[in-house]
Image (cartoon, rainbow, N blue to C red; front, side, top):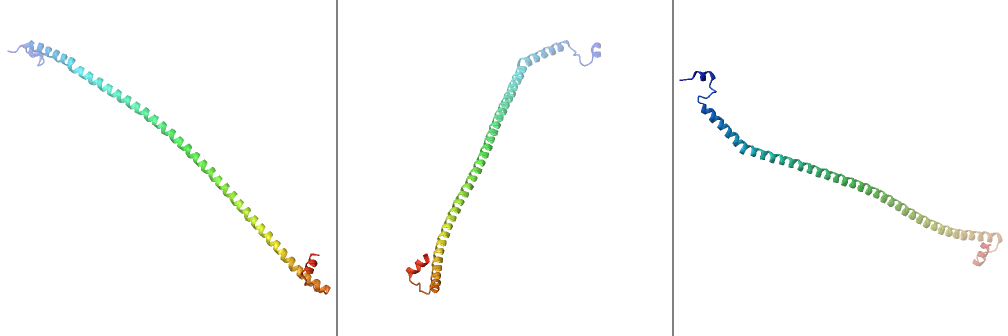
Length: 165
């Protein structure tokens, strides 16, 4: 038969009080097993994960510091390369200016040489022309003087003396 007290309490209460004791003992065993074996494993995994994450963060920070250092080195090298390029440009400009100056000096020397040669040639030609003009004018003067004087001045010695006078 069914106990009238039990019916009123519903299906949550066991029929026998031993079931409550067995349930409590099993709950204590499960709690002890969980506390003894499962929780330490979770704690170990938690610590391992924490250390792994912390190590990853440290590695990431170290890598970030190395990347920053590499970036600074790169920027320093880039600045050095820019300075060297500017220096090379300045050297090239200076060398170009020297080449232009040398070429101008060489051209001036060549112009001076050509001018000297031309002047010397002009002087030689002028002297030759003067000598030729003297000779021709002397000849004409001798012929004219011979006609005026009435005497032949064809003799070279006499003609030279007359021309020189």
